Amino acid sequence: MFKKLIITCFIFSALTSISFAQKDPKAKEILDGVSQKYKSLKGLKASFEFSYEDLVDGRSQSQNGHITIKGDKYHLKLPEQEIFNNGKTVWTYIESGNYKEVTINNASEMGDELTPSSVYTIYQKGYNYRLLGEKTENKVVIQEIELLADKPNAPFAKVILRVDKVKKDLIGWEIFDDQGGVFKYRFNSIDSNAEVPDDYFTFNPQKYGKIEIIDLR
Image (cartoon, rainbow, N blue to C red; front, side):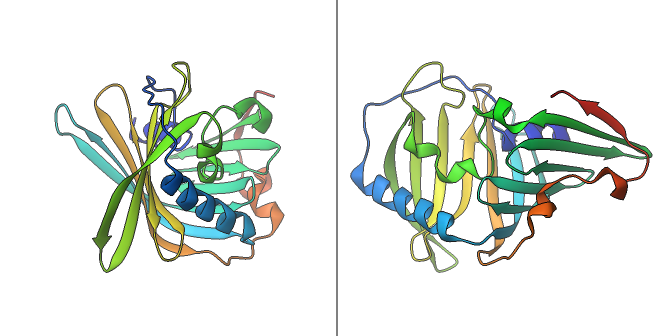
């Protein structure tokens, strides 16, 4: 169940919408800086911690993973599963014991989903935003920006982005669902100058042996 939550959250399933009529110019300046820096990178590699907390009953779970991003491409690695996106095709690979499965989709059919690469530009369309404030953690000044959907039928209602003020790096984000749960991502390490070959984002079944292929294209 938790593995499914990770995939769902990284693609950020639909939430109930909340809106407020505001586009904070200070927040926009910060977000523009983060987006521009991301677009200038050759590639990005990061290790991260994913956690889910149920605010109603206090339950929580956490897991670690790795993400590699290059433009609109990404490769997400988690225990027993990986997601490959080369900009055209998305492969979701799951391994459990001796069972191996990959599901294939067209990337264009996932246009309304928030991916590890589109999180850097999500604010540019369909969202209002405001700077919540700043805090210092381990001598790093972090700026927190809240994004709220401006339409009731938006696929995701609320996102909080956490930005390193000096480096202009996105270091984490939070998603609040309509069931009293909070999904959190925090980068533990970031290599923002990674050189990654394009084939790293394409799933190669020959590397995985016997595998069930579910092609939904």
